[in-house]
Image 1 (cartoon, rainbow, N blue to C red):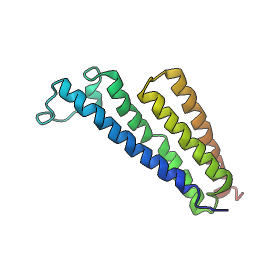
Image 2: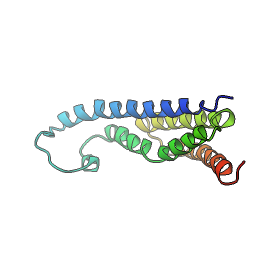
Image 3: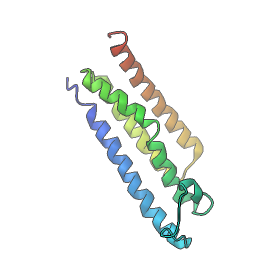
Length: 145
């Protein structure tokens, strides 16, 4: 069994986060120009300052990028722990791929149609998969199994 197999979905989710970052700026910068925002003169502020200023569909990309910096941090930690502990293959890798696939689907829903029920359903499934990975990690390192 390849105990490092779990690192491939880790790399894919990291790359997906960077794709969303590029998509965020590819839509936000033109929208800021269209809104006649002078970024060269702007001081302080956060992305929240752009709510209601830029179109919602532009802001969805920023919201999703932020979401990819939240719960997936738990995924990265447990995936790395499983890889280091020699449990990164088999079911752990399969769960990791399922989590990454669900997070990508979640992103695509959020940045396109942003239907809350669809997005929540996919997020809930991804969260359950992440919970399974967390339980495997605790089982391995706390209970020795």
